[in-house]
Amino acid sequence: MNQLKDRLLEAIADRGLTQAEFVRLINKEKKVISQAAVSKWMNGMTSFIRSDLVIPVAEILNVRPEWLNNGRGQKRYPVDKPNVSAGTERTERRKRVPVISFVHAGYPNSADYMSDEFVEADESTSDLTYALRVVGDSMEPLFHNGDLILVDPTVNPKPGDYVIARILRDDESTFKKLRFKGLDKDGNQIMELVPLNPDYPIYSSDVSPFTLSGKVIEHRTYFKNRW
Image (cartoon, rainbow, N blue to C red; front, side, top):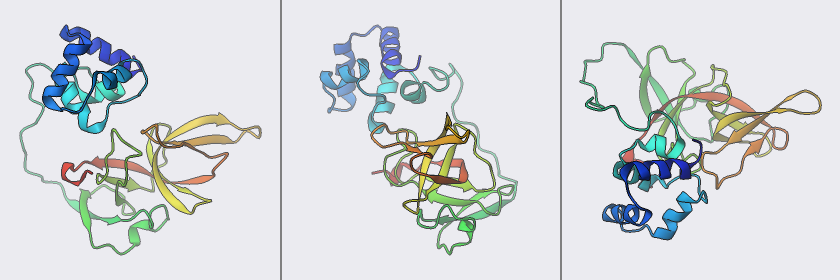
């Protein structure tokens, strides 16, 4: 079940709701959604629900927001099981990782740039690992403006990984999902940098050459840093 509209119809049917009843329940939480907007979700005219709406919508339908927006994981949380584990005292050693800007990202020595901000990471993390703050909404609905990502340039990315890449013609770095498209006429692998937000363009290596600079190994979200 790959489309948002299919998952919505299934979840609404599970709740025994009509579309109009579904809209009324949403408007009790967020008084901004019209039945026309919901119709676009259900008719396949949009591929995901806006980030500030997906959680209340998922709560109304009693499903997980990740499943509703992306089709990932289980439809519902496990029944009668806590979704927060009991706290335990941290015993492993930690290391400091610099938080740098996208201007400095994508170079072999990115982690060496001077930084006034550091975050903790596992002791096993590579010494070349650095952190970046997500800028903009091109990777929504999963990554939000202000979220923190840890990047390890020593790990070779695979298709489906989230990566930092340097666009050669623009001499700037970007954060995208890696996808392999196929082979060109000379047998060279064609790679694509794909935004999760469909409003943004896809970079293809046969049109806009780029170099892969590192794999995203950790994602930390901060609600207070969003738009």
